Amino acid sequence: MEKITINSINKKAKTMKIPATVIWYNPDNQNIKNIRTYIDYVEKLYIIDNSKENNKKLADSLNSLKTEYVCNNGNLGIAKALNLACEKAASEDFEWILTMDQDSSFDSDSINAYFRAFEKMTKNNVGIISPRHILKNDIDKFSDVKESAEVDHVMTSGNLLNLKIWEEIGKFDENLFIDEVDSEICFRIIESGYKVIQLNKIRMFHELGNLEKRNFFTRKISVLNHNHIRKYYIMRNKFYMLKKYKKYRSRYIYYILNDFFKVIFYEKDKLRKLKYMFKGITDFMKNKMGELDDRK
Image (cartoon, rainbow, N blue to C red; front, side):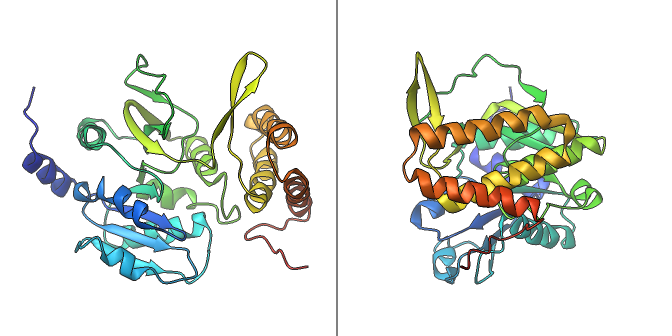
């Protein structure tokens, strides 16, 4: 087996010339720590900031010539921010881009193995290559799985996205603003005849909502405790996906019922969350997509 050193890792990252993007929203120092787990492995980092406040000083704390900071002075949505980064990368003749959430990080073994696997694998007709996502503080239950598998959807964070295919199929769907952006582009990639590949031995850590494990008879269920605004987008966009992708209709019916069940029986602020979930359904029926208009 080839001996791996820091110098050889950096050399490989440089020859592959893969940029990354991270989407910020009210970032803090922990998000800088997350970036440090992968910035040495990429050619360039596009920080797309959806915060109202300018966070360039925080970005500059990385002390890296690789970073390009873009402040949108407001939340344009995850899909729009991803498209901005991909457009920048494509204009600079990059072929792939690593897409990251601000709450995601790699351990050193995984990021090294990820880029080495990417370099060696056959990438014909592949639209997305993904690590296996593990929630922080959760148990890794999948140590015995196959090294890789074709899947129908993955989370956006940690993905290597083929920019030619991204452009060919019509980019990220900005109707969604946030939530289901990842599943939607995966479904469209597959419908266009391309593959989504998950590398099961590559782990990436991610935070998702305010995760709690709650008892449901003899088993544990995960409750994410998103706030009422996020519940609006989750419900509206699940109905959007239910209508757009008939192949996955039964899956989304289950998701919708499951969301209502968890809010009613396990979450706080039930009435306000339910109000916004029904508003999401109503806005979907009125074809009100994009950012929530919450004016009275």
